Every structure is written in structure tokens, then in C-alpha cells.
Length: 295
Length: 295
Image (cartoon, rainbow over all chains, first blue to last red; front, side):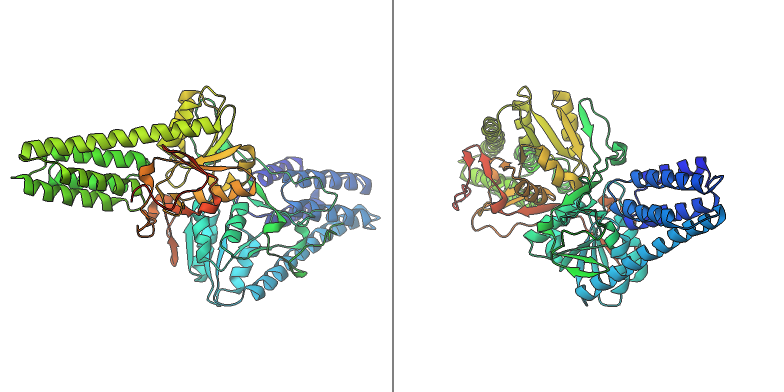
């Protein structure tokens, strides 16, 4: 991963709309694993400097996604703590740090999904919004447990279609709706289940725009609203307020009109009062400790 | 309007996604006005029979829209009450009934919009969903009163784009968003304003799917939620529960997947507890009488 390739990778990470925060966090770690092996550096000191620079650039790329900042922060700390007297041993240690964090993140998602699947149980109809890899793990666990899914298309880029395709492959019956139909469709569901881009210290959930509406509809219809994600997505208590990324308005496909602005805010924030249960690898919580695990 | 043309007109009415209930109700009356002039009938009795048949067919075409049923019901009653000793005088009376009802419907919308514009006042930012001709009348009234609009695209057919185009013509600054962004965008608005397809006897509002979510977001963000429409849209107390029309799933543009159903429910129902104010030609109401004006 030379400088030019790294810049390309960074641009691709910023532009990615198809993958959720957990997948993107692991991808950034994979980039760092590769960087550890081949990033230009003359000696250990230069390696530490470059590792820090690349780490910070990746951390800043998707400010709505705490998992990226948290996992890369852990990688930087892991590299700094590596003994690495020689450049070669430092490269090996840094790559190993990345691999272990990828595995830890994946394992956390799997465990969170297991907890969620146990909580949900057999024969349920679940409404989800956007495409969360952790929610898909839950669907995978429940695919022989008479699961039915209601899936939003998830404008503007319709990543809900990828969820529908996966469910179809697994033989899980599903219904695809527009976001506009969430209000009444929630009455046909037993519960709502979403992933998260970030869970703030107070339990607020940053996730794809529309999640807040699904949570409001769930409360109105008397349905539980579950958030399932790995603990790495938890923002620190002293973290700045979440940044809600604005993407290219052209994604909406609207014509241009004089005096009319098209907005494409990708995320919204669901207040903790609308969340019934947060599910992480650590278990099922109806209230979140103010002490974030990232502190 | 011979039988064949009438069938075409009926099909077009059923398929129409661009016009709101008020406009469609007036269009059906225009069809009946034309039918009065040239509908085949040998004598007054045959005319009455055909008028009733056409009226009932039009009334059944858009079950989510009470205004169509109400206005055509009034037309049928008006025709039945017409003296019309000769076929010619009956034709003239029936056409006149239709014209008067079109004028009454239009005048009611104008008056409702006037009340709404007065209530809203200067310098407000208003979020609307879907395309209501009455809401556009309100925007027209307020276009020199420092109005700003937030307009949803209104999937699946994006009739919000037509609203944006009109606002652009009028020089009203506007922002176009996806439905998914309603939750946070409501915080940028002073209030939400929508039209209605039907206002049920209990004050529930049948309107384009997504209206219910806008009302939930308005309550959550502490913003008033106004419904503005002519009184002809009020369903009778003894009316059957509102029918929420399902349209062609192909409108969503989703690929087909085995085992996946695509749903395109066009309307939803907003409970009266989420409506701050109903505005009709009769004024501004914070509570609706259970006695519908259509009874």
C-alpha cells in the first residue's frame, strides 16, 4: 500500500455506501495490516510516524462511525506498545495487531448476533432498516426458526435490496417497503431490529437516516426497538457530538431547480428513550452504563 | 363521454399518482359534467339510471379519497332532485350540479388555505410531505411572507419534485429530502403542514404513506402538525374504515427475488392524537366534532 494506493483506498472508504460501520472498520484494519507489511519506512521511528499518520487519516474518514475510530485507535496503541526493536519485527507486530482486532471485531459481532437471536426467538416478524452486517448475522441464526423480515429499501442507494437478496438466498420470507410505509408496516412486525454506526455514551444511536422514524413508529405501535452491534461502536463519554455525514445530493436523482437545495444527510440520531434494548457481545441491556467500554 | 371513453377515464382516475384527492374529485365532477351533456339516454328515466351507474363507478375508483365519494354523492343527489321534465333540461341541470360542486370544492380549498396562511404567518419554515394542491395554495399565499419549505421527495413516484418545481417558480426557497430524513429535518422546521385524502370522523387523517411518520417526528421534535383540506374530505361517521390503496409494486423499481414480496401501500393513517390542528374552509380546529359535516 504505497501513498497513492492509500489515498485511493481512503477515497473509496469515504464514498462507500453499501457497507455498514462494522464491515468498514474491519476493512480499514485490513488496509493497516497491509500497510504494516509494505508501507515505506527506513527505520522503526519512521514506521511509527507513518502508522500514526495513516491511522489518523482512516479514523477521520467516516466520522459518523465510532467503530472505525475506536478500532484504529486500538491499533495505533497496539503498534506503539509493540517492542519491535527492528523494523521487520515492528512490521510483523503491527500486522498482527490489525489481524487480532479484525478477529475481535468479528467475534464481537457474532456474539452480539447470538444474543439477539436468543432474545428474539422463533416465529417472529422483524422490521429492519438499512443494511447491517450484524442484523444479517441474526437473520442467519434465525433462518430456520420461522423468521419473517420486513426490509426497507433504504433510500437513496437502496442497500435494503442487498438485504432482500441475501434473505431470498437463505429462504427467509421478506417484504420490501419504502421508508414511507414504516409507520403502518411496524404494526405487522413483532419488533424492529437495527445495527448502529455509533452508540453514543448516553445510548443515543447514530445509524442510517430513517432509523429514528422506525424507532418512533415502533413506540407508537407498541413494538420493541432493538439495537444490535459490537461494543467497539460505543463512543467514549468525552467524545465530541456525533457528526452526521452529508453525502452527494446527486444520489437522490432529483432534477435541479433554482433556489431549491437537495439534502442527503446519511445518518440520524435515535434518542435512548426510544431504544428498548441494546444488544452487544456483552449481553442484552435495557439501560446503558454511562461508562463507555471505550474509556 | 361514451361508454368506452368513460372506461378509459375511470382507468386513468384509478392510476393517477400525481394529483391529490381534491384535484381528482374535481376531475371526476368534470367527467360527470361532460357525461351529463352527451351520455347516451333515450329519456329522463334512462338518464337517471346511467347517471347513478357512472356516479357509483367513479365513487368506487379511489376508496382512500373521501372527497370523491362525498362530492359525487352530492352530485347524484342533486341530479335526482332536479325537476328535469325533459331530457334536455335534465342534462342541463346535471351539468350545472357538477359545475357548482367543482366551484364549491375549489372555493372551500381556497378558504382553507387562507385560514392556514393566516395561522402560519410570516417567516416560517414549513415541512410538507407529498403533493397537496391545498398546501400549494398556502405556499402561494405566503410566497412573499418569507416562507421556506422542506419538501420530501415522496417515494415511489416523487411527486415532491413537482412541489419543488412549483416553489422554485414562485421563488420560495426550498429543501428537498428523502422521507428517511424527516426525523432530523423536522427540527429545522417551525411546523409540518399536509393535505389529506380523507379525514375520518374521529379526526384520523388518511394521506400519502409517510404522513404518519412526519406526524410522529413533529411530536417528537415539539413541532405543530397541521392538516389543511376542504370539508368535503371528511368521511361520514358511519363510513366504513378507510381503504388504504395498494398500488403496483413495480413503482418501487426493486428487482424481483424469490420469496420476497414488494409492497406499495400508498396511504397511511395518522391518529388524531398526533394532529395539532385541522384547518378547513370553516376555520381552525384543535378538536374535530364527531358530527361530520357529510352527515
